[in-house]
Amino acid sequence: MNYKISIIDDNETDIEYMTGLVKGWAEAAGHTLALSAFSSAEAFLFEYESESGYDILLLDIEMGGMNGVELAKKIRQRDGVVQLVFITGFPDFIAEGYEVSALHYLMKPVSSEKLYTVMDKAVANLAKSEKRLRVTHDRQTDLIPLSQILYVEAQKQYVLIHTPEETYRMKTTLAETKDALDEFFFHCQRSFLVNLRHVVQVKTGCVVLKNGEEIPISRGMSEVIGREIIKLF
Image (cartoon, rainbow, N blue to C red; front, top):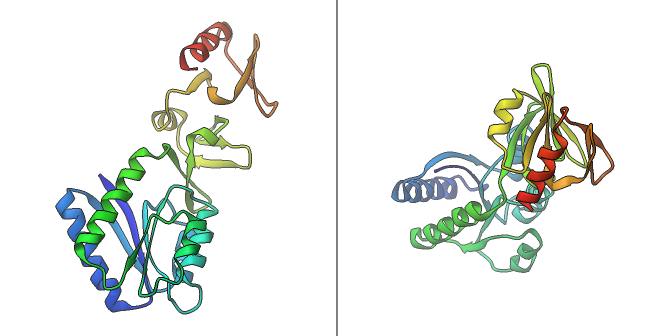
């Protein structure tokens, strides 16, 4: 498997050391990596605005400026699945880690044995996590849990991914997007994929979602959608 991992630490020596350990773990486990490193929380956040979608973050706690716990809280506002591993020389911040659902604390100096165990646990958690759609929009990338997507709409060379809070506009095709979704997304009309998790009523010419929106469906599709909902639920 390929994993996107970043190390955030203001000590260059520690970054080099952790980079070697992470690469060793990946090689031993047969994984490939997109591995990056940042010398401050602020530098990571600047990059994160346009390039998110990380699987695992290894965060030093004691950094100048924003510390690792403060950074983790900001990340959690956008991503509830990324695995957060704190690295520290002091146990003082452990209680705060519960607020951001940290996977583990590793005490410096980190041993390869302990890191490998934690990394294995992180990828196991990722495998169990809800599938997410990688959405690239406005020069940034977000991972949207499939259950949060109401419907997907084709618009010329773009698709619109509608969620209760926001609509994302991504340059791709409806067919390519459908391939990245799960069995709950139904091609109800030429330009629409509807998430059957959110359908509360099926009418002759549309389906009604929990939020009251009506999504058009093709002629004769109401019975097909009804049968599909019964099968899935």
